[in-house]
Length: 308
Image (cartoon, rainbow, N blue to C red; front, side, top):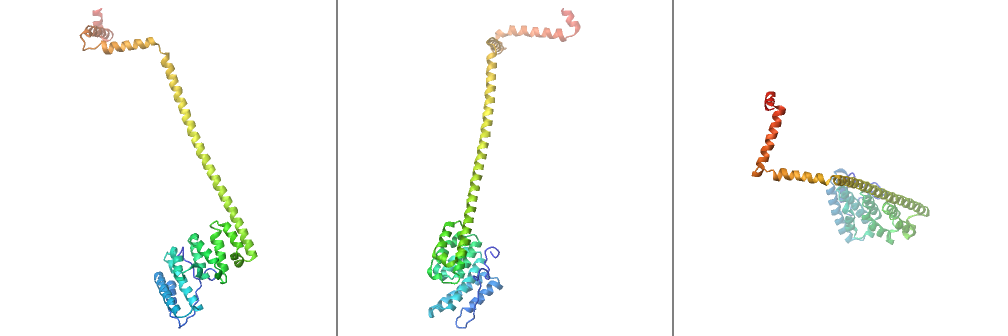
């Protein structure tokens, strides 16, 4: 997933930059450097992820011995950012948010730059819905409003999650809440309202186009059915006319002719049966008559004259 879902460590309003100051007091600086080497130089992303997880475990042990400090927060964020990048390169982006929650416990405790990085990652892979609820909870946490990246998170949430997903009503409501008033100036909120209006017009236009296309499709199907019905009707009419003509012709035949034809068939097939003794004289006379006619018409001339 190096070309489709990886998020650059240097991109996005300072969300991915990792700046570490080496300190011999804490043992996790070496794991951070090693993880960066695996990630950027050796391209061994699984080793980079394993190194980050080991470093986070060591950092948790170190945090139990002393109070949380700025150094601890920065080192944990650095290891988490490198781990996110390694997961993305391993094509395991679907588990990024869950992995981050394992490190911080609650969504509200995630630093602003890591939230920004997660938003950019899930937007890049077109899975905005995964981050919607998490970012909403993070923005409504009063403790996060004082962070320097709060405005950037709110802007990314508005532009890349709410508006593209069609939640324009929720986007307008966000502008009127404490989140909108803290994150945006009055000019920015006015520009955001204009953007929502444009998006609503696009949605209305697309819905109208879809309705028109459905109507055209329905009309086309109806016209095809009408043509088929007309063809069937015309065929039935032709068949009816043919049967009518045949019935008229059958009726026009004389009953006398029908009776005569039936009598001839009766005589030929039943009465004139060569197997019956009564049929022999009649057959002999018919055979003689036919033979005499044949000899007269096609026989030699002298034979015909002699018989005369």
